[in-house]
Image (cartoon, rainbow, N blue to C red; front, top):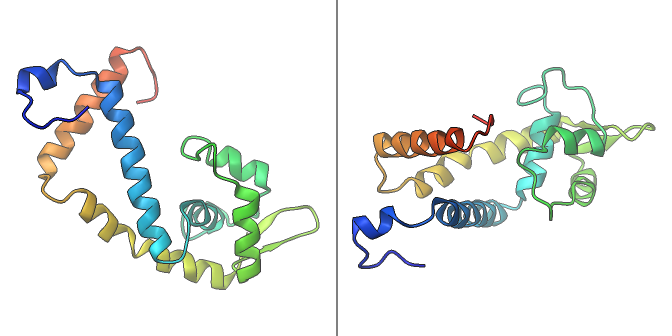
Length: 155
């Protein structure tokens, strides 16, 4: 489906599920490609964020791969292999692993996490180019209402 030369009435009749799916895949692919240009993967970034007391971890405690998978369950993709991604971070010295299989972020890993985080605004700005904040907010509110209309409690 494309939207070239389609009237607003015709667009209004198109399935939201199709377009949200296309948007989801396009945004993830774009974000991951930009991150790869900077030498890291989205799952590597998530691992560092979830293990850093300066980010998502409230206490900086180490976590096992299953604990990390659970913590990331709402956004990890089926194809993401956290064990393999963690191995890369262990090789880089950004994570360590204790005898119980818990991964811990190192000082170098936390510095890398902070460096990776600096790229997020540029990625967001590119995605939001030509979209007014008010239009973006309206879009999110419409999507949230659609979610509520389906009986979901996810919002």
